[in-house]
Amino acid sequence: MTDYPKPSSFPLGARLTDGVWTQTLSPRSQTEGRPALFLDRDGVVVEEAHYLHKVEDVNLTPNAAETIKAANERNIPVIFVTNQAGVGYGYFGWNDFVAVQAQIISDLAHGDAHIDGVFACPFHKKGQGVWAHDDHPARKPNPGMLHHARDLMGVDLSQSWIVGDRSLDLLAGKNAGLVGGVHVMTGHGTKDGEHEAALAVGDDGYQALAANNLYSALSLLDYLR
Ligand SMILES: [Mg+2]
Image (cartoon, rainbow, N blue to C red; front, side, top):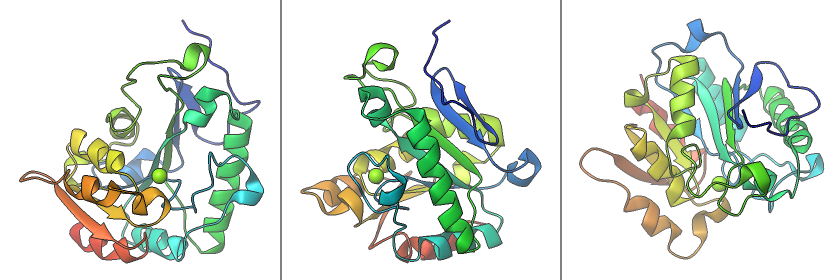
């Protein structure tokens, strides 16, 4: 069994599952059978800060808390699915990730909003040591983190949506069999070709929509029952 680096202590509901961060913050009874709102974290919920790992660099995007609160009020589980190659590269460690997450959760709480789950993948083809993996099943655009969410929380992927600033976020949703994804123009969203690539992920079985930011993606919640 591989001995993966761990944080000094795990926050509530968190563990590493074969090296992937898997954390549930709500009882399964509250998420079982529900459609989920999967959110990419960096560039969507928080402003893009190159390999975010410092608490002082945490800034929620405009009205992110209001959007998440609206999902909370509809009993829609809100779940972060975030590639964290910075851990794999050795740029920062799990303790930094834990501190940043605590700040995000605290900032959201100030807006009466909470998240129900957090999944983070540190693997990358250029990762160091145990984090090196050519094409890890949990690294977006692969659907592994969404599968972990399904297995641990019982959410209904076939009724769920994802919001992301990169085409690989929408592709992960497609690969997991979600209803669709919303591409936002925050973070990397305005990079050359990103918007077009994200919308091109859509097809007959998967909706790819556009929004300016997470807040304007709020209207997508009408698709969730
Ligand atoms: Mg992002």
